[in-house]
Length: 336
Ligand code: TXA
Ligand code: MG
Image (tube, rainbow, N blue to C red; front, side):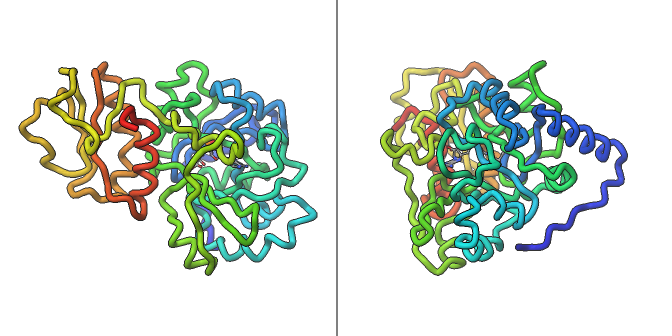
């Protein structure tokens, strides 16, 4: 694991916020936490009543499990079922090059994690997020934090504190503003339930090939969702959608659309200068996938607030981070 350096928070205010958040969480309340991927709504993962509050606030179906956030490898290994723990140590140690960072591993669940977190299942997703405030909060509180993205079920994940407040308004739990999320896309979810056959259930900025290099075994994307397996309900095709119909530029005849009020999310400069878009968001100069990932959700929320008839989105080649970006866009779009 790359060394976690916890900053000395000079700001009294921030120290007090972390202390308050820690107290609230221990008392079974929710707290909105910043991470490097997206903001999360956190609760003590061992407290079923607290975890239930997350499902209620988000309107999340109870069959969609939450991922857990820990601050170090020992705490992660403690989330693995006691009887299988020793089998997983090696694999988790190998993967530790990615932590703290945007990789969630799905492992057999230890009994101390509430079964509400795992939606009644035997496995749990765990990661070490790379945000100094949240790492400090987890280590000060000593808690494992169950935290889904801090949006209402099926809406776009938040990458700014403002997104969370805009959506939940006066129902927003105590929130620590940690600035703009550095990555902007939810973590890669890797199932290692079958120890010899790791599979990616949700693509993210950590790719199959980078995990293959570390593990030395093939890592497949398992992106098709099936009711029977219910591998990862987050892979339901209708996920992450804005309210405004969204279409992929690659699949759309711009001039055939029966709309007048169209917004464009472009990944590079100079896309369709001849077309009279009502609003344009350019996410990077030249289709830089890292920048596109960081700015995508903010742009989707912004255009979704403009009462447009349609939002048209650019595409990226489907390799590396492009796989995760196109996966999110397909789920959000009407083009499929
Ligand atoms: O980057 C992230 O992962 C963010 C931040 C807050 O950490 N969290 C996040 O959580 O995106 P959420 O709940 O919005 O998405 C978690 C995804 C869902 O698709 C869920 O179905 C899947 O992970 N998942 C969680 N536990 C699982 C499990 N035990 N087995 C299979 N899939 C699981
Ligand atoms: Mg989510």
